[in-house]
Image: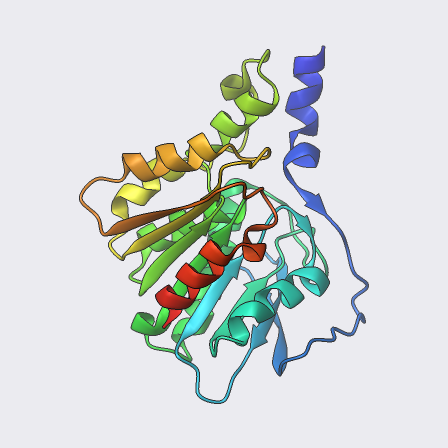
Length: 249
């Protein structure tokens, strides 16, 4: 019975969107353009495109599973202040975005955002950055394109492993409609890969990020361990700030 509930409620367990009225006015510290990108299936994806005067490049940022752009826009301003343009989208059902959620739809929306950037930047200027659930989309996207680099913050080996950690008594592999098998897609990523993970992460275990890193064969890759780092606070650690600064320079 609980297993059946897990199957039907899994989207509510995986995705924790908050919604915004269509006339909501964003307020950020840096100049931005609000975008509404229309997908092939009729969904409308709301995104924020931060722009700096002389950017070092652009970061395509895939956010975590909770909240909306009113929150994530402020979080990504950290990178704008490092002199990067940033594009961050709200997933379907989040914020002002519409459409039906599915793993493939999320991949398609990610590619749509990438294609939008290709109209304004050289591909060699694009950094793909994924955080938490967003690492699944980021890894898939990087495997299908040729960005400058891929940065993953608190990633997982695959979603089933995280689900098993959260619900150890259920056959989660049979129940899951969302797989996000990052360990498969990451093998096809050709650019340098940087991974950050905290040892005290109780949402996506440190071991899952480490396992993903160890699965990568013959690639330029670096793993940064944030001692005592949790799931949502890596930015508070000097180790994270120092290394992200070095990478983005």
